[in-house]
Each structure stands twice: as C-alpha cells, then as structure tokens.
Image 1 (tube, rainbow, N blue to C red):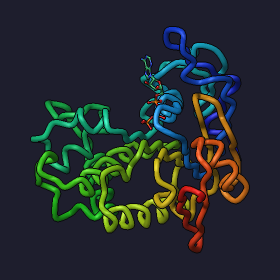
Image 2: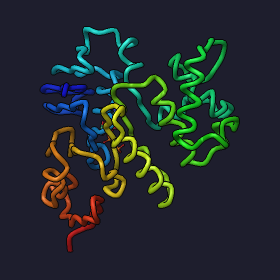
Image 3: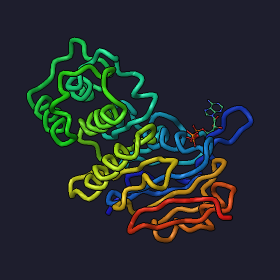
Length: 261
Ligand SMILES: Nc1ncnc2c1ncn2[C@@H]1O[C@H](COP(=O)(O)OP(=O)(O)OP(=O)(O)O)[C@@H](O)[C@H]1O
C-alpha cells in the first residue's frame, strides 16, 4: 500500500478567506474515497489541489510520490485522471466521441494535428467499449445526453491509464436511471484490480457507490471527519457537516439522508 495523495496542514487562502483550513488527508492506492460537504465547503478546491491544478497557500502536498512546488505539473497531470464541469466545457461540441477520448493522450481538448500512436487508438477503442459508447463513437459530443457525456468524460479521464482518478460530481444532472447506471459502473471500476485510486465529490449520498471505502466530510474548508465509510458516515457527523439534523438511511451498502424531524 502506498499513498497517492498526502496533504499536511493545507491552507488555501483567497483574499481574506480560507477556502481550505489546515486540511490533512491521505489517500492510499487501494482506497476509493467520496468527498461530501455543503455548497461552497471547498470540495472542488480540494480536488483541484489533488489534481495538481492549484497550489496550496501553506502546507505540504504530495501526489503520486511527487511534491507540489518541486515537480513539473505538466509531467504529473497525465498520471491523474480528472472529470469536472469546467473540463467538460472545454470539449468542443463538434468533437466526436472517439476524438474526445483519444485526445486525452496529448492532454488537449479538441483534436487538431496531433499524431496518435496505434496504442492510443487501441486504448480509446477499449475505453469506448468499456463505457458502452460504441454506438456513439462518431457522434458529436455536443449532441449527447448528460449521461452519455458523463461516460465519455470518464473514459477520457482514464485514457492515460492514470494512477489517480478524480471525479467532481460525476452524476450531477442525471435522472434516477442514469444515476443508477453510473453508480453501478463506478462500483465495477472501484472493484476492478487494475483500477486507480478514486476520489469522487458528490452532493448526494445516493450517489456513493457501494464499493467506495472511505469518506471525507468537509465544512467551511475544514475537515469534519475522514476515514472508513462505516466509521465516518454517521448521522452526527453528517448533521455537523451540513449544519442540519439529518437522519441517515442505509439500504444494503447504499445511503440516503433526510432532515431529522
Ligand atoms: N478564486 C476565488 N476567490 C475567492 N473565493 C473563491 C475562489 N474560488 C472559489 N472561491 C470560494 O471558495 C469556496 C469553496 O469553493 P468550492 O468550489 O471549492 O466549493 P464546493 O464545496 O466545491 O462547492 P459546490 O458544492 O457548490 O460546488 C466558495 O465559497 C467559493 O465561492
């Protein structure tokens, strides 16, 4: 077991505000984490640091055995798969599904004159098959449904065979069937032997795949609780995180939360 993310006493300051406050967090390669917290808690900020796209104001961050501030982030980023709404917006609407996936090999959003190796094209085909996108392979990204776009984005994030996969609200905007389909796929990914370490940010407890092992709860930039799902996902910790008394419902290995009357 080795740490893929190791943050120590991380602060992220913008103006007079601490977006992150003394965050210490370690993700091991075998772990699958969910990050939960209210709007504006700092979830995306935390993920951006783990993705080597943002530097902390104070504190130490190690990602895949490299220290932020001492590593060339352009060499580190291909080792990290990331999906987020801002990244999705960078993909041109006219890009085909195949190009949206294969172009991650060059780290570009929008295929132009790059030359792709046969191994890149084979990898893209494999991912397109794994994520059930074959019938959409020539379709324009902009013409896809939300659920189809989410699958393309995850396939794209896996293109470089990353050691760390970061998913920022991958199920946002999906209907119940789309959400359940994605949760099952993420669960399968989490269970697969060759899978990278995964960190997923979400707003909804129903979206936590059953195979996810750890949870980090964050409020106003500070960690409320972090550790194994069974220990961290308690009504008290969730109530503290969201500032509202919450009832936690478990259905098998799935969760849902409601206001406590
Ligand atoms: N560049 C910036 N300057 C000042 N404040 C910022 C900046 N970027 C983000 N923030 C603020 O930092 C806080 C945390 O933002 P972040 O996007 O990380 O939260 P989040 O938990 O992902 O929220 P949400 O669930 O709504 O997506 C928010 O209050 C946001 O307005």
